[in-house]
Image (cartoon, rainbow, N blue to C red):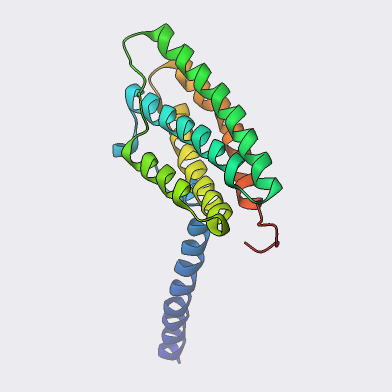
Length: 188
């Protein structure tokens, strides 16, 4: 009898473990930026934060400009205008902080990863543009949130930490809106 109870308990645990793992995997796939742990290797230097934050902002501005011209859905065009305005303000503030601190040059061009994404967006056929734009915006804002949250928690420069902290709500708003974008047909 004891053997049967023990066997049943082991079997119940064994069967529930894959289900728990699947549930956790599904939750992390919904928002990988929020669920991935911060590792020691991911702690950013101030220069890394500045470079990455600037690249994110420049990409968002340029992608938004593409979307203003090529998006088919009105909601996409409105979203594009919002990200252009918000990321322009963000980059202006970042540029001001960098100039005050001195000693750091902002990148003159997008990094290779973001340039490739921008090229992909520019090359998107009209029928695929909104979908490509939406997916890039979701991915980009998840990455941006992770970057800004990390620096806000662990950054070396107090002014930049404050900038990062103050930007998180806007980046979350952008992510939420990107996730809610729908093609004119209502299917996404």
